[in-house]
Length: 118
Length: 151
Ligand SMILES: Nc1ncnc2c1ncn2[C@@H]1O[C@H](COP(=O)(O)OP(=O)(O)O)[C@@H](O)[C@H]1O
Ligand SMILES: [Mg+2]
Image (cartoon, rainbow over all chains, first blue to last red; front, side, top):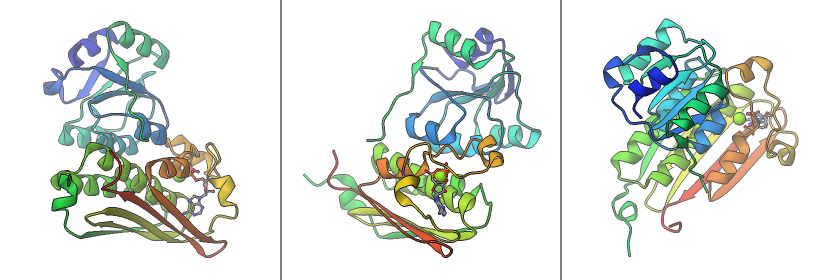
């Protein structure tokens, strides 16, 4: 599954980096706590979250995230989208809630991003 | 066998000022240091642990203290991450180290912080951790990651 598939599966709207949707999605992490993401997310993971503030971008950078999906129709403001475009981090938003998103992504082959920092 | 990071790491010092409620410096400094470590060819695990410690420690200064500094020393054998702040200090360190304990405001929590996982995560990611704090004065946190023992 690549990001284009994710867009279809979640009926999502792409907010930036349309040109980067060929990226392959293998692992996902869904959560609204930045500390938790930092600790568990391995590189090239798709983040699924309802956090839309600018911190999520910085954190995504620190984690080398693959892309971010905002759930429940949440969308970040224009400056966040612009910054994300510049740094090459695709963003999407879907009306689906987090549980359904995770279920659909799992069904389509995505797995947990678990990399313990021992 | 001598590992690569041991052989090629020069002494590097990186310093950042953390202003009150400066919630962005944590991400910025973690990204900056991460790039430096990547250029030095450090192992993924070391880079990740360093980034987490920097992010959480700097965020704690921004959230809980008045202002402070973050210093990162990269030496051939060890990476030291030190935050020093002027602020309320931590009255009960044992309690503060507990997962889930947080005095962060509702506002801060809404931003995705304040889960009470910062200090436990720092502990988990460091080989040595030392917190020196004085109530009403401030807190100094020193975390070390050894480069030549693990793995
Ligand atoms: N630099 C600091 N100055 C004052 N208090 C701090 C500092 N760092 C941590 N604390 C205290 O320790 C608690 C736990 O910290 P932490 O585990 O990082 O959780 P969080 O930051 O999410 O609250 C904080 O809520 C705060 O009360
Ligand atoms: Mg914290």
